[in-house]
Amino acid sequence: MRPRIFLAALWILTVSSCASNVPKQTHDMSAEDLWQARNARMADLNWTLQGRVAVKNGQESWQAHLSWQQNDGRFEINFQSFFGQLLARLVGDDDGVNLYLPNEHVISSHDPTLLLQEQLGWAVPITGLQNWVTGTPADDTFIDKTVDGKGRLIHLDQQGWMIDFSRYVSTQGIEMPKKIILKRDGITIRLVVDRWELRQTNG
Image (tube, rainbow, N blue to C red):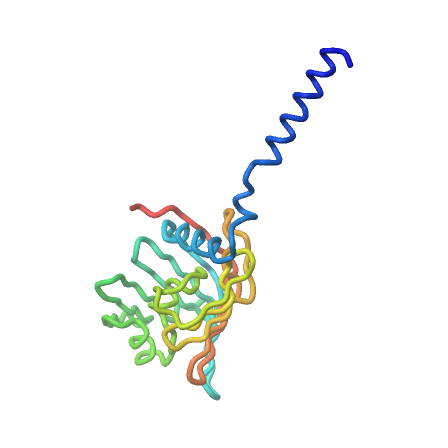
């Protein structure tokens, strides 16, 4: 073999060997590692969603369009009828929450879930949903969880709610929940997200 041909062949073999030894970090990570990495990434993001929510409690049911904006611990949620009429606006943070009704009546509370239930009859767990809706637990005190091979949350048992994530959609490089079903004590909440927007936090 000529020297130049031999050196070229040796170089190709060396490059191929190095390429094969490059660590495949994503493929080598376990489902649990991928889940933890996703949770950490979501902690650095603010978000906005547009979707639909349906609540059923026995023979009673209610549904609405939903617009939810989350910014550094502060949230604003608009509930609208399917005809576009504003039903209620919920604005709050760690210090409390205000419920704005169409008659310009404003009611304040420290518990958004109780406030909605007392004023509108909707048992929607807003505090937990701030995390659940993004596919992350509210905290580390959950009873049980199931993640798929991509590290996406499929099932969560937390705060008395059984939460199932049946569909995800890729949004700005992150898999975000598309359909969520929550169940507790005869109450079923179905949330379908039509649109996600993700933003970096200000922190």
